[in-house]
Length: 222
Image (tube, rainbow, N blue to C red; front, side, top):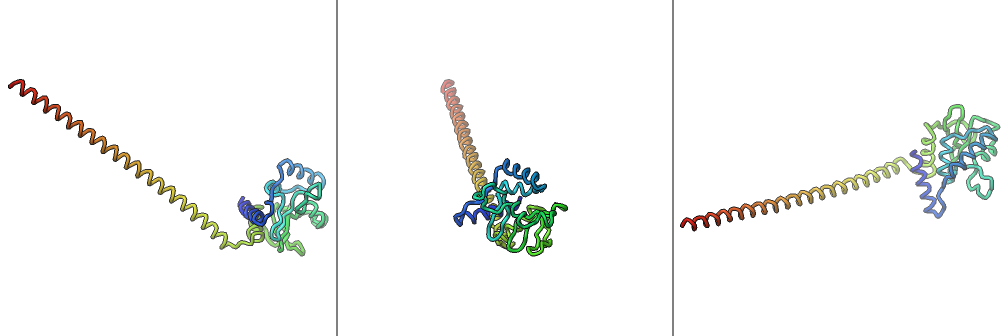
């Protein structure tokens, strides 16, 4: 999921500012919450959003808010709860086709049950403004352009820097391999030279022995 990269950037900004990063809830808590909501309100929370809650139990950053699970105790409800906010907005009574997931300074972000689509709705009349390809597309767009206020140029620069960094690492690894290969070649060459020296020395010794033997035989005949 690409949006997780931008969520990490949001968490970095939070920690740099001295705040705790956004964390998810345990899977068993999320599943229990899902079942409770379905039983009590007849609402099926989208699987994509349940997966998101496992990573971050909602978040609020730079005017962008995505709702968390509804906690039983108010002191634990740092971020507005998904169901309590939809009840307060009257979503279930006015239009049961939508589940509002969060909002920004520009839009409401919602899941449309009949089409299984994620949408950006006008904050005044809840009319559809943007239809996203999927949950990842919606979250990537919201986190990148609104929560982080990034531009495509900045994103391209980051990708370019990352690509350059990766290329530098590959070049370093290649140079190290080249050096190792050169060292190995030098070692083999040195070993070859020593072997040749030994062979030459052996041949010289053998030649000398033959000469001595020949000289010795000559003396005996004399």
